[in-house]
Every structure is written in structure tokens, then in C-alpha cells.
Amino acid sequence: MTLTRTEVRDLLDRYQISPKRSLGQNFVVEPNTVRRIAELAEIETGDQVLEIGPGLGSLTLALADQGADVTALEIDDKLVEVLKEVTVGKQVNILHEDAMKFDFKNHTSSGRWKLVANLPYNISVPLICNVLDTSPSITEMLVMVQSEVADRLVARPGTKAYGFPSVKVSFYAEASLVSRVPPSVFLPRPRVDSAIVRIKRKPHPDTTVDVEALFSLVRMGFTHRRKTLRRSLGGMVKEEEFQKSSINSTARAEELNIDEWVRLAKEVRHEN
Image (tube, rainbow, N blue to C red; front, side):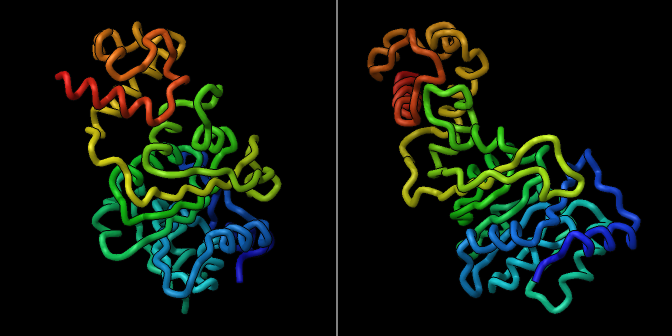
């Protein structure tokens, strides 16, 4: 069960809702796309699933029908009303919350969780990074995001899309692009393509590195990505620290993989 394009329009009219660009509201109105996302999430009965920005509830219904115990975070008070109507009788807990202020770690402290969502474009990268930083019990994410964002999440060293989010994701998880999604499945129709990305958390992340120091270094490196590391990290890394970590100081930030960033961060931390 999910919502058709006609049902979405009826709900918007009945509740007098106009999609808000400020909240990145683009509702999926193609049932096959919604069902595919739910199937790709590989839900088993009783799985705890967190959905961000459920909107009118199309994906929420599909996840519940797969047997998920869904917790849906929605910031828009009018949409909360709609969600309460369309999910009656389903195993869905609706929270009127701002996902950017939500305490993911506390809420997901019990058991293992999946995050499955059509993420609002304006919060996708910081939200994913926050979840990776704070909530180890969220072991997998399947998210639909702007196509350009998807490329950044899965990018490899040496590519134009590779940057701070790419390094952060690769430290915590393995990310893969599942498929591209055309604008025609949304209402209102966005000007860009979307994509579905799967992010699986690594079971044993490196606990011997100072994570805060690592990402401080990475962020500084990509702030001046056209400069060599010797110049972009000049105030943070000494030449001998580059040498001891076997990192070429004339390389640029986009050339280093996650293992090299970790090695450099450990050497800098060790020396200081």
C-alpha cells in the first residue's frame, strides 16, 4: 500500500498544503519508486526503521507494509496531521521533530536500526554526517538524495566529487550508488535528478585515531583543495610529520584515501 499521484494531490488540496521549498519538500508520487525503495531496504519483520521527512507518508506506508517498526520524524505540523491520518492502524510512531536537532544516539540506543528516507535536499549531507558521527546503532542507510550529493557520498580519491563528505563516509562505512531517479517521480518536480545511495556502516571502525582531530585535518585540507597539502595544512602539519606518515606534502587533499588521512592524523596527534 502506498499513495498514488491522485491521492497525493487530494491530500494536499484537502489540507491546503503547498510544498515548502525552504524545507526541501518534494513528495514522491510514483508508487513503483516508493515500493522499490522499500524493497531495496531489505526490511525484515520487526526491523526498527527511522524515516526522515516522511512528507505525506508514501514511503512510510510501504516500509510498514514490509513489516518495519517505523519511527518517522517530520518537522512540518500540517504534514504531521496528514501522517496521523494515512498511517492509522500501522506500526508507525510519528514524531514532530526537527531532524537537525534530534538526538539520534539517545533514540536509537536500543537494538539495531536502519535509516530509510527520501531526504530533503537542504539537509542531506549534514544529517548523514551527523548520524555517522553520533549513532553507531544505525547500521545501514538507504537514502534518496540529489544526484550531485549522491556522487559526493560515494566518490573515490582523485575525482572531482571527492571531498569532506566522501572521506567521512568512507571512514565509517561503505557507500554505493544504487540507481538514478528522474524528476518526474516528484511533486513538485525538481530541476535536478535524484539518486538512491546505500551506506553500510563498517562493523569495526578504527578506534585508535582521534576522530575530531582527523576530520579537522580533512576539513582544512579541502577548504583549500587546489593547494598542496604543504600549503593547505601548513599550520597543522610539519614537514617531518608528512615524511613519517609517508604522505607526499606536494599532493592535494583529493588525492588521499581514508587510510592515508588516518595515518597522517595519527602522526600529527602522536607528535603533538
